[in-house]
Amino acid sequence: MQIEAGAIVEGRVTRIMDFGAFVELPNGESGLVHISQIAHEFVKNVRDHLSEGEVIQVMVLGRDDKGRLDLSIKELTPAPVEPPRPKRLPRQAPEFENKLKSFLRGSGGFGGGGGKKPGGRGKGKGGRR
Image (cartoon, rainbow, N blue to C red; front, side):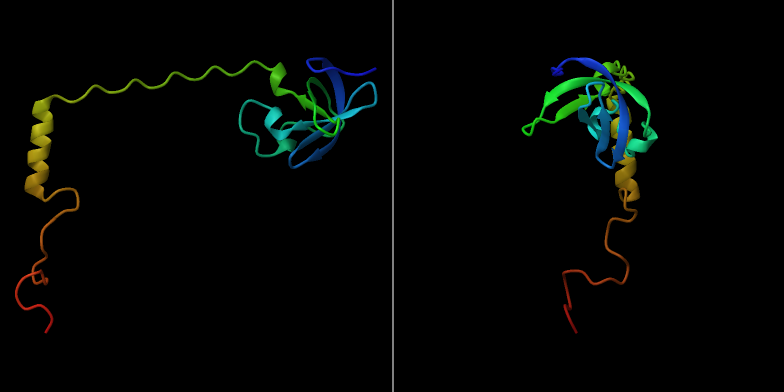
């Protein structure tokens, strides 16, 4: 029996590799669940999600150029709802902006000092001695 793309089948994890897991299907064929098709979130280690001998449901995505089955677990699980983004803070009032600029000018800016260091050499007289 040939398994077609879109079919949902049960299979047994036969081998786990760094890049995914091999799953044996009921008809005797094996396919690969690539690490990117295991879960919606980032998967660092396949063994954190699957173990050898585990029976899982997979969706057949299709076949690669060599006729091997590409499988997915992720396609069978609902996508997580993104948490709401924080609202952008409104711009500060112009009076506050002006006070802040004035303060920073008076204190020498963010770097502290901002000007020439006492006793330092600048562009002017003397040059190298």
